[in-house]
Each structure stands twice: as C-alpha cells, then as structure tokens.
Length: 100
Image (cartoon, rainbow, N blue to C red; front, side):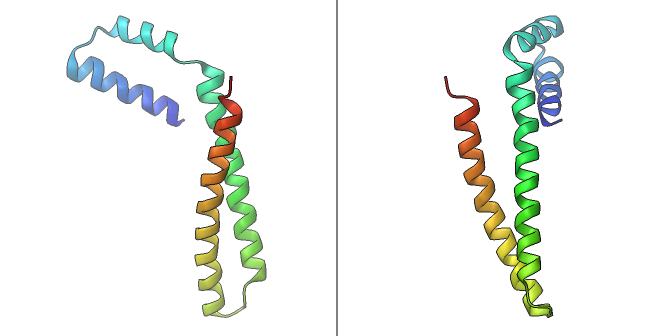
C-alpha cells in the first residue's frame, strides 16, 4: 500500500507539478520498480513487524500488575521494547532481503 502511495505521490510531483511527460514517467517507473523486491518485501516486513509488536504487547500485558500503575508501566515498556524490536528487525530483514 505504501509503495502505491509513493508512486502516486511521485506522479503528482513529477507529472502534475513539474510537467514531466506522463508516458515517460510510467515507463521509467515500470523499469525502476521490481514488484517482488519493493512491494513484496514491504508486505513481508509489515507482517513481521505486526507480529513482533503484537507478541511484545501480549507478553507485557500478561506480566503487568492489575492496577492502573501496572498497566501504564506495561504500556510504556511495550512501546520502548517494540520500537527497539522493529528497528532491529528492520535492520536484519533489510540485510537478508537486499543482500547480493
């Protein structure tokens, strides 16, 4: 989805605002975008990130104290751990997907 929005944004800027020929834009876009590598890898990363954040939140919620303070601490821990996990997973997945 994000790739489609990026391509549409490129079209608006290139063709509508700058005045690049529409046929030339689509031709160059098709030769520059590899569907599996760009879109497929984006979908794979989204699923992995979603699963990681889900399981981190599940574990932190399960271990939290059943008080408002316990829930707020678990929420904070979830955000911090999930952010670091997404960063680390992005590094590893990018290295695996785009290695030659």
